[in-house]
Amino acid sequence: MRNEESDTSLRARLTPLQYEVTQHAATEPPFANPYWDTDEPGLYVDVVTGEPLFVSTHKFDAGCGWPSFDRTIAGAPVTEHPDTSIPYMPRTEVRGPGGHLGHVFADGPTETGRRYCMNSAALRFIPAAELEREGYGEYAALLAAGAQGDDSSEDR
Image (tube, rainbow, N blue to C red; front, top):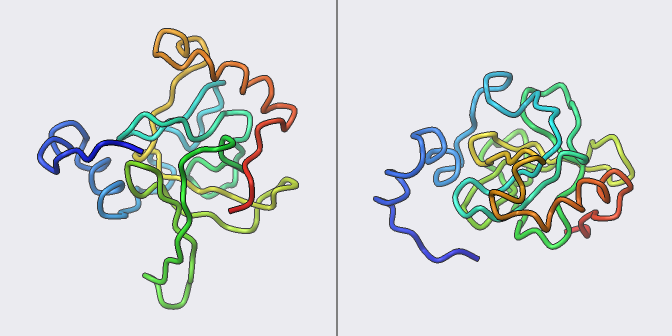
């Protein structure tokens, strides 16, 4: 987990949207965010902490306008919490070490049956070609393994 960063520092480092999404559980607009239709191979990390969370091999087009994954990286530091902020639509919030990421639903297309519907503003994408340079070289193998299902997360 991350060291606590001051609110002032977070506000200075993140865009206003990144701050609102991660720190106040806001939701970015669908189809108007950077990663909803990204299909390049790579790694998605927590925008606040840099913790690896998802690989592109587990991303799919859910038609919802947000980046969707059928699983996290095994051991990814995510937690799930009941979200009753919309009374008629109970959901499960997904939080990473930096704060709110999005929600998970039980309507995924694969054997996991899960759809992690994440906010692009809560993520940073690192293309496969830049993993080593960015300090994430050890995760390159997950891109190949992920295509075979070897890095699925445990049910939480």
